[in-house]
Length: 297
Image (cartoon, rainbow, N blue to C red; front, side):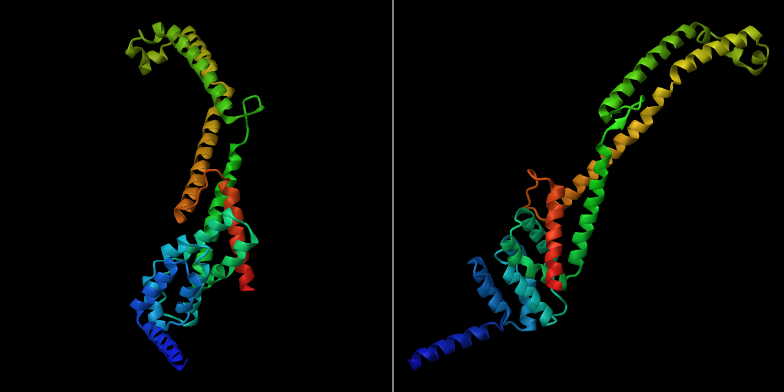
């Protein structure tokens, strides 16, 4: 019995001494993490001194732990809390924003209280370790909110008569009116071409213009007025407004897709193809913020 106790004591002493070596401590943590023994790995981290912990945290492959979330939540939480409590400086970069976005993705896919309970303390630790993490997520949410507001430009638009129709139909009708008017204008110009094309350039000189008769001026006025009546129609003035509306819609959709692209790049594991990204993101971020607030109180 005494021999067995002595052997256990020696094993514990040897294991304790092993943790003074950053390389061996890191290897032990990685072996446990690969075996999904995250709590055992967290227990090792909780016993490391500042110097060893800093070295292990700098070498720890956080991306693998992020992929293992939410199962690895306790391990990451322990790492962050230990770095905070020991006041390790300089603080190792443990990719807090990447971890936070992974949590947002998980919360967007699963709103159960069980997941929130498993990850709430980790969310709080992230914000305490790197306060900028919350600011980054808040900024992304405001950016998406602004982009979503632009979706309001995709409603119906008024045509020349004041009726509400879709923008594409309004553009089609407006362009058709332009085509009809331009055809009339071209026809009118063809009628006037025998007079204007065969006209001697010298006839436009200042002296010749002063010598025009009353009948010449009257005929010129009638020709130009008839042409102006064709091309200067109030209905044709809506095209710039419709083009501006179309441009606003294009920019709005570009902004929305840019935001969604940023969210996907933040967590490549997210699949938003079959989901409304706006509702998903708003719900997930709200849950994340609530968890942080609840833990901070």
